[in-house]
Figure 1 (cartoon, helix red, strand yellow):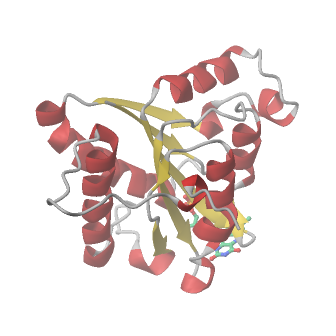
Figure 2 (cartoon, helix red, strand yellow; figure 1 turned 180 degrees about the vertical axis):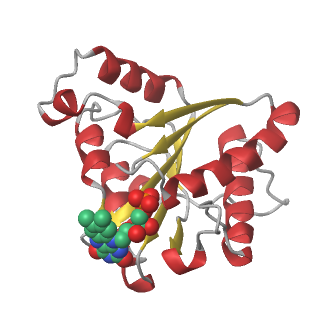
Length: 200
Ligand SMILES: Cc1cc2nc3c(=O)[nH]c(=O)nc-3n(C[C@H](O)[C@H](O)[C@H](O)COP(=O)(O)O)c2cc1C
């Protein structure tokens, strides 16, 4: 199983990236047991001009698209910008093919200045991930800046509540991605709404 961690903040020192670091640390703990391959993509490192002008052929963009292709699961972290997700993440997602996330499990993560836009993951990012064909988009993890205070040394400190939500999210990611979810006898797996066929 290969997991790609995508940092969608344009900032170098970033709270949403700090959450991504915490996810990475948890995945590394599970790595030996699960034979995980971890990869990292910082959108801010890609050529800004190539991103803005949709230059798929630029080496940094082509490499990033290949990273997405070869991952079986993605963790997408973004700051909330203007009640949605970041523009740099958007221009990158725009460069992916319509089925780029087919068969993949995605864990969305966001940080915002206040709790008011905590639903941005659901109303803004989730539909885009869905449109790219993600197999399963896990419940997102949202943290406000107050839940990730900066220490005197300038490091971000993740509060206990968020830590335990990240624990749950990573466990779910591992379970869903490995396909090893075991259901008790007599129980049926939930069918995603997109796969429900109705006739009237
Ligand atoms: C341009 C800009 C727009 C923002 N818009 C919002 C917003 O609409 N809602 C919100 O809760 N926080 C907003 N914020 C605050 C950031 O989402 C918040 O500080 C976040 O943790 C930054 O994440 P980062 O450090 O990973 O970039 C905005 C910040 C910037 C710079």
